[in-house]
Image: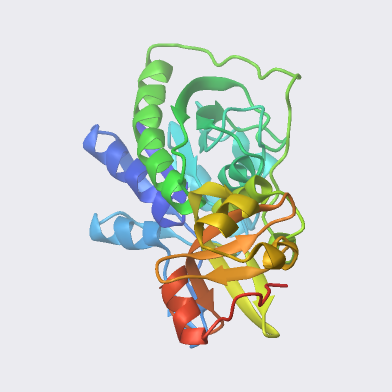
Length: 324
């Protein structure tokens, strides 16, 4: 097939490679413009742009998807289908009808659940134990188009959003190749159900501040969903501290106190939400349901990530100090 591919981050690159390996004629790639990023404000080029240039494919980088010059450029390409993976832009209505087979999107959820920009992150925060990929035809409504294929996968117990997205990116690549085969064979997509529609807007930094008064599993879900971006956080000694990972276990505070030979008189203080208990190998924090989480990876403001126990030694954390 004669294909236009649209995408930006590294999770879109496996799909581009898969289409090329399957013999499709990717005549052009659309990605976001190069732009300053990071503290140094150095110019950043998207992973898809880099991959396309390495493959000798022309790259379009419109400032806006609805710009007249871009609309004309897409029309002139005369592609049969356009494939979208994490492009980060809405396709304007006048372009939806340009390819004969439309625009096919790979979305990282089992639609109609988790429509929107952060389906994996929101699924982990909600405590889901499975996820998947949906390929569907774009329509003007957000992630509301008819479905070609869905693939379900189990979420690993300690998997964080970045890891799950990477796994799903390879699933999406294969499902897109199969979807284009389906289209060639005349398969028609099936309308999405109106039941079970949920939305997954992009995570905001203020949303992922930890509330240690919540139950341990709720806190753990937020940490998993926010890793790597924007990163769940709290404060320690009036400075921001990112909590990147916790271990799967949650330990009852009373049992932990006995196991660590904690005096029973200190138990009440130990059970307060946010209280830290450092030891040689672990760093525990008490949560609102009187259970501990083991903090396995932390990142102080402006510093590199460290194992929780190592961070605690460096910060000289004392038993009874708290995260806020």
